[in-house]
Image (tube, rainbow, N blue to C red; front, side, top):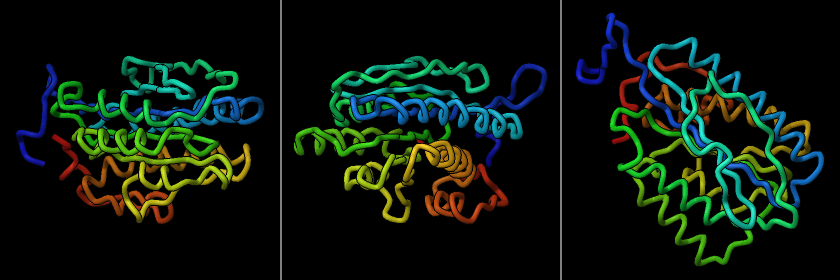
Length: 237
């Protein structure tokens, strides 16, 4: 890290750099019942892990937003909230809602565009959780993935996908991750959703430390280890 990468707060402390985390949650009709209960428990369990990590280091400040999607996307938490201040309000299912992923992807690209994200921001993170295959038209999905690749913040983001049930593991999730070495995390049952989201939180924190080396994501999930100089190449724009 160079001197220009460091911002000094009044009083001599180092200002933490923003790490934007967007949780993208499937609230379609198929998530009703135990799945939605388990997802709310899992997210509520994931956030303290991230808050602990933030507290234990001095460089990053995690800012959380939550986007839901069904037939249409909707912000559950639209403005970035510091993770330590967030009090989880449960998600609810959209009755008979479809699994239209493309509009949610376009919103992600919009909020992670250069006009919307600080120049000093660390690599953002997007965690997608779904229990079904996208119901979008193929050309709509193609256009949405094109929007992701056109937005510097979204293109550079740590993108983690959690499939609830093996049938939910799709080519769209692999494409969302954008790295063939990074696996889709599969929760075979509702009991495993919390474990997979904790693994996702580890990936978010470790890859923000590891800079542009995306192999660190796989290492953080299966062979956790910290680099010796974690904040050398983390700036995205």
